[in-house]
Image 1 (cartoon, rainbow over the protein chains, first blue to last red):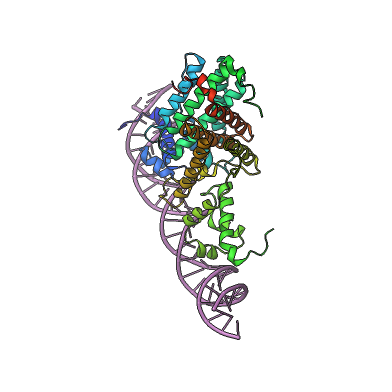
Image 2 (spheres, rainbow over the protein chains, first blue to last red):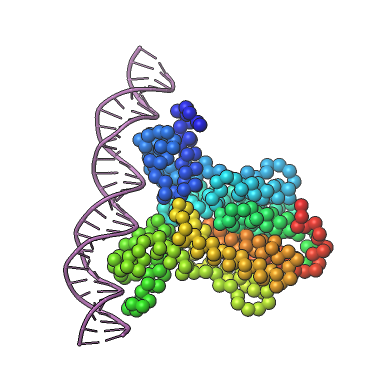
Length: 196
Length: 196
DNA sequence: CTCGAAGTACACCGGCCTGTGTACTTTTCG
DNA sequence: CGAAAAGTACACAGGCCGGTGTACTTCGAG
């Protein structure tokens, strides 16, 4: 496969191997020896780059794969595109659940090293949704972006439990409905929907 | 607190203690000794009732707290009621995330003992949503119930990461919108919303 | 009452996992 | 080229955890 890894890229390489293993088999279930083996290095070398497993976890989290969000186009199309990408992500070969959720579930006691990374990324995604909602001319961008966020997480979580992409489809249809409603002027026809 | 636990209730008591500890601190992080201590019994006694930790995990999962679903009322009100109960669940003292998701995240390798319980419960919830959607006269009960499912999971997952109940509120508003649309005859006004 | 089941107290094993010590070879770069 | 930095190979410590053995006491149902 990847014979001959340049020394200068070794550190990053280790992080990627760790990320994959942690994600696929769980943080607690994977020992440093396993990671060193798969990365084709010595445990000693691993500890040279990452003095503790916790720091390795943090590094792995930083390079964890994400759902790609569309970088251009009309706001509404970008939002919908994000959920379409999500569908692809969910059906990718080894999907096992939202990395954030999975890692968070295994990192309760630990104070901080990795948590902050997760929280920062989540905040970034929320910001993106809010910006899109605003640019799309939503009546209540805060509400819409919050709804999108929930749907996104929901599709990921539901996709964890069941292999298929039905959750992603359902989320996508819900997104289309909610976005259309929130950005259309006709929403005045249903003034009572969002309250009570 | 709970001095004097009846012998006949001991087994159930152990499962409850385990469920709480597993949920709050993680399955891997909690050892049998901890559980035995908190249950005020000997490790030996624990192993008398549950011959392995895996079986204890399964038992704990069976008694894990759930969101209560309304048992009576009009279908639409019951659906909405379910999401209101969810909001309460999320803001309950020690909420740390959807028990199913958390436990699943820590139980990859293990083949079966606990997984089946989780899957059965999820299927039950899905069935409940479908029945409600059908009774409410939804145009496409399969789609609506799938959407509700995704929103439910999403609220739980989002609620994990951030302490507040904003996700639950957002999910609730989305539910109201989607249910109203799906069950109203006026949805003919928006024939294009759910496709493409 | 009585006898077996249930519970106790405590020591102990074996495996796994994080992390280190050491003596050696290889690469990199000024 | 030559020295410092990086990597190797391997053994080993120390801790935690799941699970067992044993000899004893207590409970509770018939």
